[in-house]
Length: 82
Image (cartoon, rainbow, N blue to C red; front, side, top):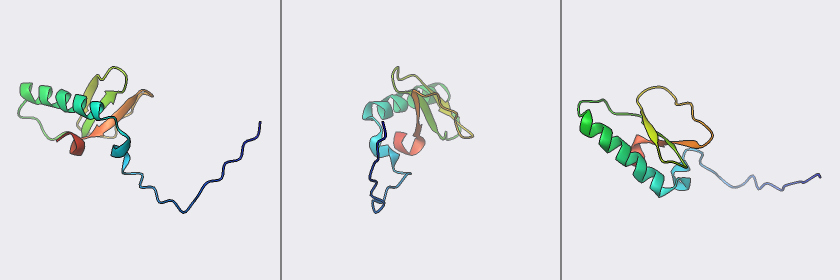
């Protein structure tokens, strides 16, 4: 089956504006993960964000480097968490 798709190249898409497509419950879960970690470790540096599983909402705080994500994970930058 051969399918052709007509793509409108005049549409301007900002690739950095992916926050619009994130589930608000993921941001809330990432905030809770950060707040819990900060309550135990108040002297930590500012993290880059949280890598979080979209299904289970379990996550890890990322402090350096670009995270390598599993297919079911996404990255929530700290700017959306604070």
